Image (cartoon, rainbow, N blue to C red; front, side):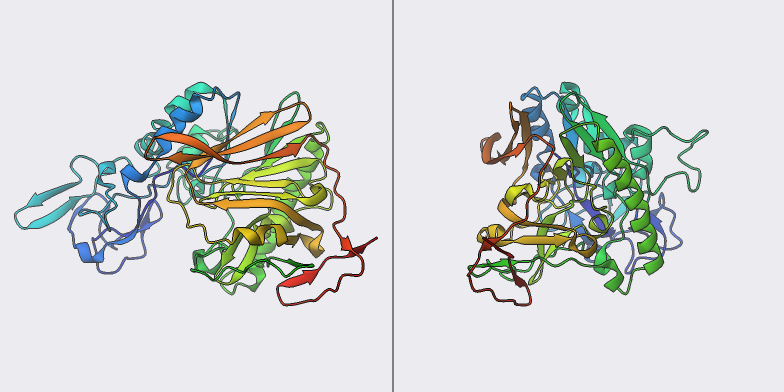
Length: 448
């Protein structure tokens, strides 16, 4: 499970007509106005994303998951989403004002004034307790956790809480939360070995997003491509950060080099087990649409893969995209991709034509080194979590959706991942079929 926090992301809390250059917890503030001061509030200035507290199922999901009596919990990041207070009156019917401190707002005559005192939000113990530790308490008590850092735990957001409360890496000597530069943007990978399998864990929290924040996918009604014609495949596009004019090419190169070194470490570790699961916040091979373009993300991590990094990896587990997605590949040409970013934060709308998924072929990495045809897949915009169960010959994975009316879980998708090591084979189609090449469609190789 992952991506659980209450999405409260104010761009303007109603304090000023236009935000200034200063920030608090990555939120634009009014220049010259101390965060604890009082200021006149104007509802028309309010801007941002606000999720209602009664549309946030983390506590229920935690209790239901704890009842499964799991042996371990794999959490793929984004614990803390509430980056600021919730404007009052509530925005577009999303009432999240319960996260504010009791003295946060008060009526004085005909005017509404804010008392900007941190409540249950922000990168502090109050925010972490309210957004994660309290609602997840049942599941935290039920089993040990493998916790991964999400992009909402980067240093501009909730990075200090990550290092103090969850990170497996020791704090620097004499570390203090107030010391400038003491939050590390990058941290090395780590692993959790069991007898039968091993989890290879990556911190990919800091990757500058494309297009000033649109991270490879963007909802556009009816624009996502349909299935490929018979005998052809749909090849999703990879979005190079070098083609984004807002990116620093030198920094892109530096990050790819850094992550490439991390990937080599994971490759070396994978030799100790036949079955390995790669777990990160960002997916390696997930598909989504940005308008009428189908993309496969994440490009930076794909470019960081060596030719043999994933030889002994059976599945990649991730979040970041706020839905459930699963892709398995013909002949195990790539590790199965599982996306479980659907355990609490606002969901993204499911806009992918499900008939398209089995016609997809991925070609990613340096010189398209990682290529495979999708065998089966699903994308689903539903709250829930997934359960992996070890069997005699592999692992069965069941995705559960949360029924808000009954407060119960209902299974809606299951598939199997064989025990490792993975043995990929080249996909092909019978020789003699007519092949065509289009902008987004390409032909499969011929096989006897």
